[in-house]
Amino acid sequence: MRELATRVYLADALEILEEDPQRALIEEIGQEFGLSTLYEHKFARKRLDLRNSGFEIELISFWIMNQFDENYGAVLCNSSGNLLKANHAVLFHPDQFSHFYLEFPLREMSELCTVYQELDAGRMIGRDFWDRYCCLDAETGVVKEKNQTKRVLRHYFGDPFGSSATDGVFESNVLPFVGSCVVFDPSVYPDNYYDFYASICLLNKHWTKPESQKNETVHLRKRGPKPAPAKREYLSRYPDGPPDGVSAEAIALELTEAGFPITGRSIQTYERARKVRK
Image 1 (cartoon, rainbow, N blue to C red):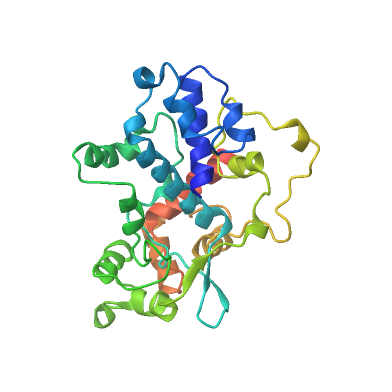
Image 2: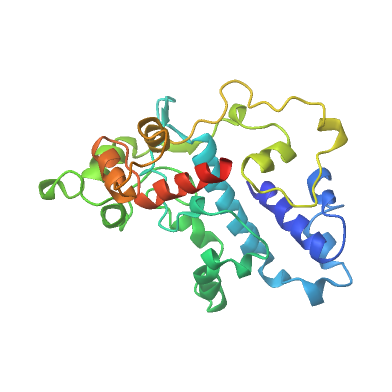
């Protein structure tokens, strides 16, 4: 994940330095090429904010993680080695990075305004992105109940099960998976950098597909992307979008009650993406 993010960060930095961003796509990252390449550049101190490079790479890594889940779907591996599809509540993060695309410079994005305010005030570091997962351990990726888990789930998903079961979303959608670990199946996404970045809308505008890959068939190997269960259910029930007069929040409540916890904001994001594709 970090290597994928580092390549994106390097490409933007090289562009600012008036160097070739393509290097970040095709070269191996190591002693010969990497962040040290930026530090040694004669214009680096004047044009780049290298002091926060680690934070921004962590931010990009976290955004990519959210896109992994949104576009390809995470699964949970339990102690017996069985694989189960992760649902929206298990991987819920209150900052919901899956609802916007990254633009550079990152500091100028309105969606990241609060993030940079916290960074500048010394109240945030890169690790904090991962700590704010509602039900995941930041170090291990294991599903767990945190101090604020139930409160956060109630705040974002409401109480679809009635006042007598105030922890309904947690009990039905998270508790059965506590102790399982989040994993991703590499066989379902593109096997080269260019096509992968294209699939999550993170291509640098100066990148071109390497000659060695131009004649390759873009394939997602066996199954192709499988969005999270709640997204699939929404698209199945509403292939043409929400009916007139029906709000995203009402549909979110309907799906949550049916066992597919989702927020109204997620539905609005899916609809924006659908309009763009049209």
